[in-house]
Amino acid sequence: MARRLKMAAAAAAGVVASVCPALPVLHAASSPDIRPIPMETYDRPGRLVVLPDHRRLNLRCMGHGSPLVLLESGFGGGSIGWPKLQPMIAARTRVCAYDRAGYGFSDPGPLPRHGAAIARDLDYALSAAGLRGPYVVVGHSAGALYGQLFAGRRRKEVVGLVLIDPSVIYQDKRMAAIFGSSAGSVESIRRRVQRCLAATEAGGAALTNSAFSECVAITASPEVRAEGLRPSLWRTQLSELDTLFTDTSDQRARLGELIRDVPTIVLTASRTGEPASADSPGDRVWEGVHRDLAAQFTHGSQRLVKSGHLMMNERPDAVAAAVLELVEANRRSP
Image 1 (cartoon, rainbow, N blue to C red):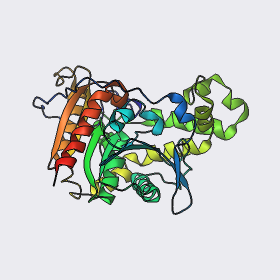
Image 2 (cartoon, helix red, strand yellow; image 1 turned 180 degrees about the vertical axis):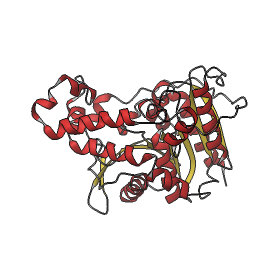
Image 3 (cartoon, rainbow, N blue to C red; image 1 turned 60 degrees about the vertical axis):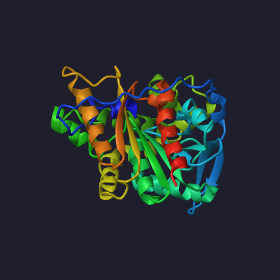
């Protein structure tokens, strides 16, 4: 999520300033020789399903087997964000990515686009598509909050959560409390989204200005550029961003212990793959926050992965190992 929602200067979100004990490092076996999804695949929809209010949501599913793995993207991401990981999981079970409302080939949804609305859309889409549980939910960054809210809706069917370098509730305030008022701000991201929204609403020359390249890369495919020209995309992103650490965080907090017994693996991105040292306070706080998140689950664990924030692209082998661990555990359960 844009380098952990910029994690503001120092790192990213924290509430734990205590020293973290040594954390297990995830060592995945070498990834199998599985080819990524070709980029041209994303130039067309996968399966468009119709929600009760007649909006369409775009699903991209592959593979066979149970449990079904669901991929929930971070801020600004859609089904296009999993080209390496999805085929690796599909070799062992069925896996679906999707475009949230307003992204890709999915219709825009009513505002606000907070976590409860996003989880409800996914719930309805799965029912419309006839895709039954059990489910293992994989959430990246902000998508980790949305995935947990979906688990609250489908508590009896969600049998595992993998949270990839996840955002945490009230992240901006937590970060600011530790590193100062500007540390937790996502205002720079918000200003960029606002500029993109203004340009698409204005149209014409505003879309050919070189400054618009911060919104849509000149080298992007025609389909991706078409998405970036829609004001609804930027309205969606603005609403997701504005509600992430307010409404969405409140909604996750209200779940209480409802999803406490869901087996959960928290994957923390680490520059070294080792616990952060004292001279990296931001990273240390981030690891501590994730450790606390994992501790909220009866069967929760945190693992360090030598990777940047976009772990599903930089270390798909490590993410796949965690996902398939939960898949196999569910298959072995009575």
